[in-house]
Length: 484
Image 1 (cartoon, rainbow, N blue to C red):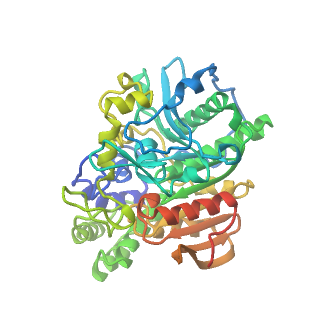
Image 2: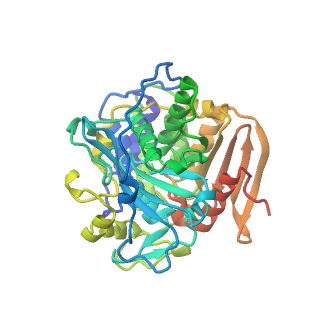
Image 3: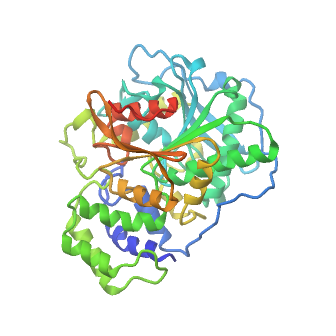
């Protein structure tokens, strides 16, 4: 197993001892942390996906006639008055023999015919783009306290795009399979299923076939997004057909490279006053993150000290309060209990009926994150940086962004990953603005843009919705975030 992975896990396995309620994004119960913990229990599987082969077999395309109309949502229980856009949700079959289907939620823009199509993927692996992305981050609605009503998100991304949320892979959210072995999955199968989903979805919604298409996501979508984009471009090259009109990708607080993840995390802790100088120096002096050798006892001891020093905080946002019964909403209407509200709402029978969700297909209640998926992940490379490097030379737009208060996939780990790419700077680091304030910082490399979001944690649109919308709009326009 990669030495960097072993070193990092000796800390995060201790983090995972603490848990919260259904939101699961406080101290120690972050899905990516638990995924890395599970990975430590099995042999490291390092599938190289730098170059895909030249073989291609036609994918399954099922009959779609009449299904778009059946998927249209009449109204969501508790939604506010004045909804002026169409909503759809339902299932796309990706493997009829196995009975594997993926669930989606689609929020059109008010002026849908003039706006691009954007796919959003949450990470985990095993986390729901409906419950996280749509209901607590960038979707048109947020769930009110109590989980019975919705309020309109003024900074929803469907203000400027048609946004498609996919629960992937099977076993996540309302997505399921009739074949139990499908729940042992991984990067390769997830990308393949997502591609089949898109091809069939475009048959159901043919008006979007020629529309500009962009892929966005966060966290473990640092794998999902570039791998799916690579597959789309690969198939386009082999078939010489543009089935999916891919124009760009944007990834927030992504997990890209295990070595950068390990070393960058400790440096982030130190530079943000979470651990002492002595502990940090002990880790630097005794831990070799680039080595495949097991960590020394001294290294492990300093890592344990680091965990004890950090204490019980929300690793997704080191300055945010934890969810409790008396926690008031935080800045920018952020509520640390928002995942709990979404859990209650999406497990309401009337809501599931309005979404056309087949709850008999899933083994229990709808969950924000399915830990079973992460513990049964079949393949993942140690790094996707070669894939990202390939995308930068493909002609599509590539953006990476980081909320700067996230310690799980921190701005430091992303900068270390970027350093490995060795890209030349085109536009030097500068402050960008929105609403009269610094929204963050940006640097344009050759064929890649990196943007930070000031005061945002792991879920950027949750913590800084207005800044996230400015960032997203700039990405769609193909322009750097505004410098004044």
